[in-house]
Length: 110
Image 1 (spheres, rainbow, N blue to C red):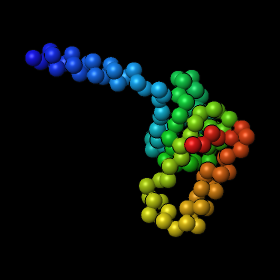
Image 2: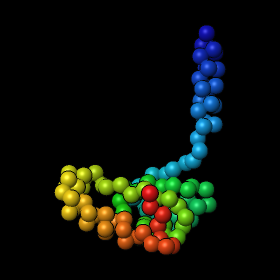
Image 3: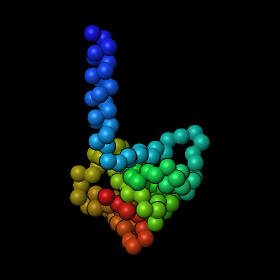
């Protein structure tokens, strides 16, 4: 009976695994020894990573991603969520962290 459930689980995981159409990466910046953004972008490209989600729109990170072809999703940091209820503050955040990198040859932001 135990082998039956194991085989069933393997079959389900195999079917689900074949349905994946892409791989995304969350790029964290909380580390003791950070790699340079240029190095990380090159590692992502070398490993065929096409998408990354950032929870911190750091200028160096965004600049390194410019022109890389990697699709970027920029999220608002958790500590700023409460103040984003104010329209003008949210608009300013988008201008500083998204719009300034949205140009031909810039960051592919989704």
